[in-house]
Image 1 (cartoon, rainbow, N blue to C red):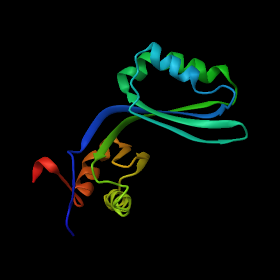
Image 2: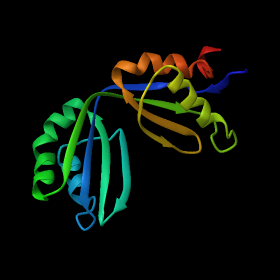
Image 3: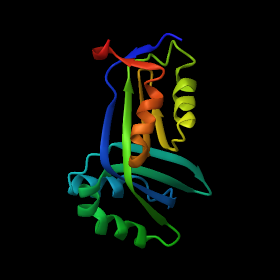
Image 4: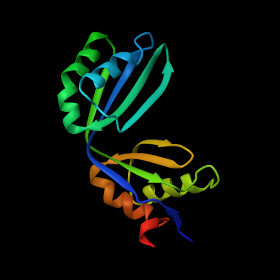
Length: 159
């Protein structure tokens, strides 16, 4: 199979995944964004995970050092509303795939998932646009993920 050209894979390590579960819909996103703004947090990944019974779940990915700075304020948000749970997963990384044109190549997403599953990599999060796929994986599985992805993709600079 001919490899698909992409821009160089970008990996960010040293990240933490923070998830909030059962956030009241009336609470909204604003309190989280206020904490992030206060501490200068630059989110690397964000997912709104649906709404049920007037609650929703959020998942963020940020640098370990930024999380440690903002942790107490984030925990206050979670303590302020009974029933909200906060979960933290350290040792997370993101891998950005840029350039395979997901809009015109319908099988590209399947190749990505197949490559990662074939290497035993658990996908913790995924966000896909027309030209970019951002994957969140455990940091200790990055090399396996890259090996699997490079079976199907070729970095344009490495021809």
